[in-house]
Amino acid sequence: MRQHEPLGRPPVQVPGCEGCAELAVRRDEARARYDRSAETDANVLLRQHQRRDHATGAPGPARTRRVFRYVPYVIAQDQSAEPEYEARCVSGDETECGAESGVRHDPAAVEEWQRWHTQETRHFRYRRSFGDYSVLEPLEEVPG
Image 1 (cartoon, rainbow, N blue to C red):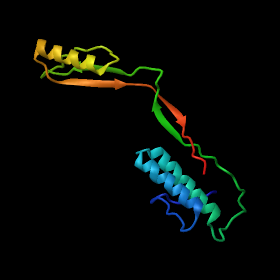
Image 2 (image 1 turned 120 degrees about the horizontal axis):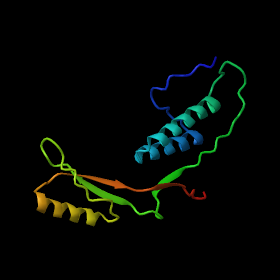
Image 3 (image 1 turned 135 degrees about the vertical axis):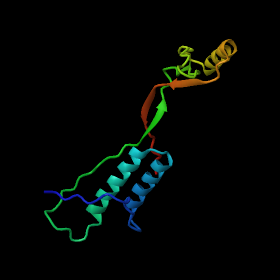
Image 4 (image 1 turned 45 degrees about the vertical axis):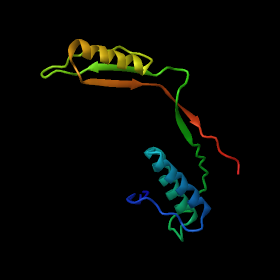
């Protein structure tokens, strides 16, 4: 049965190791983008790298070497689809007004509807929503 080490703290790079340094930079960049999934992926790869390349006399059968290819992606707004904006009036003590702007492709149109609705009803509280489509695009690697 395979024993798993407790995850706890993130792994620390081994000084002077280029592999560790590359994965630590990848983790730091993901953390700076608030991309927790990519940060976790970098930690997993760093632990695997350390077990494979920095293990000292680890007991058990010889390990087979596997190569993992990491392809970084950027999440971008899909330019082929227009974003959608809308607002709903949530004014009211017991129940919400519930009037809605309808879906618009321009935030200014929703803001204008809010102004009109406030003038007509004296309602001042709205729930605004924004929706768009996103695509994952491979991050272009700069040749070194």
